[in-house]
Length: 382
Length: 238
Image 1 (tube, rainbow over the protein chains, first blue to last red):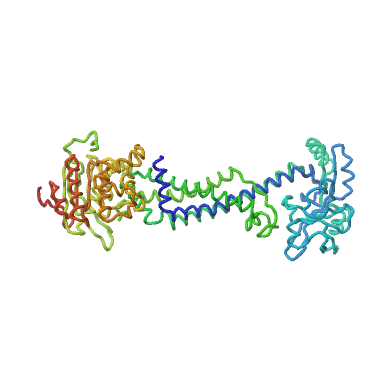
Image 2: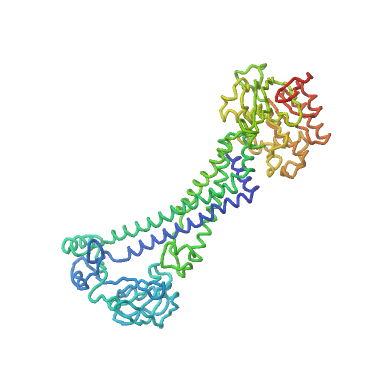
């Protein structure tokens, strides 16, 4: 085996063009895969963090199995429960703020901890303020807004000029990037939701309290739609699983086509390569030995390509915020996002990338090698 | 020399070809029948010379005799075993341990150094790389090419390539050496060197089947055949 490994390495060194084509052919798509998988894992992790730091129970009205607005009067009723620590009504809605620019309006009064942190510039609005908002960093950048500037918010119910008082931190979660954070009352007015909220967030004493409260609410109030943290976590992670799966499937098909095309163009399809295989056979190598040699060559190429791809993907995401790629995963982002993209690089992603590339490369090299090895040698050597 | 098979008697033919036919483009408009019923027995320690005009089919015959090509019909056996019953693995062992072939067009690994060309066929054996390297250098010394051991094959002259191809063939001390024009395109001194090495190989008990026009090579052969119109005819007895 060491001799075959030596020969495989030498073959790559002696044929730099072929080796480079193979490394680039494998490394290019692998770079996308590693970066994409890292972003997907990072988003999933961020979502988990958000869920874990969010409310224990989300309450809405149930309309045919779908969420519907809930009267704010429920806040007082829900607060009476012995299990409850805090109850906050919230409004979440999408709003066009410029042509082809959508923002997520989050109408919720801040609590003390939120007022103290998470701002890049300016300050956070007061709960009772009428015309003040804080913006997510990407939205602020896109609209060219800084603290002190004004923004027109127009809905079917009203037109409102608000003052931007603060810009949220770039290091905040991704969901804050294109948000307009407004006081609850202001959001109610904006969307014509007098006495209504899109949902009510409940914090309980502990997980057992949350389960008990959810059960009690479900039994006593059939009109309510109760979603616990566990349920939300399951939905969200399932969603990421689907996104990640679709990306992986598209990637695998593209990668397989690319590598196979590359192998046909520059690899084993070449006359010179077929001659080498035939010559080794003429010198007494068996087809098995040749397959081992070709496998080792592919392994070395894949190892090199994986290592380079991992480094490039890491730099692409961490240093440049994954331009061109992040927007495939997060619809609201530009091609060149101005925020830190959540990503999780670990050995598992590298191993997965290496495994996929090896499987495809081996399939692409071993089959033609086997076929070449079965052709009468004189025919190939002629 | 390599040991012969266990059930194989010393005076049985190593290679036996019977009614060998080789046709190219069989059934097509340009069908070409190169070998038309060739019979040949190659005994241990014999030296067979095959002559014939260009295109007579000498290379095709040697390719069939060395398992590089399959005959269209006829029977071929090696050490008493019919070739059609030899598995791919058994054919590889035969090529590795018993047969060696000197190609007319050298067939070297152009991007590998000369020493590696000599021993690359033995990479699947158990010997270490260091052992193989030293054996390759020793073999290159026999053809006076040791000074070029580390040079890439493509940087060698035609004569040097011919000597390298020869060194690769004899490096494994094969039982049978099949040589296709081993001294063509060589200057007289180099041709003489290779002829003397062939002579030494025969003296050490080797078996030679050579297709050649070179009288010096043919003079080494105890049996000489002429291949003409696809048939082998005995030309002279050395």
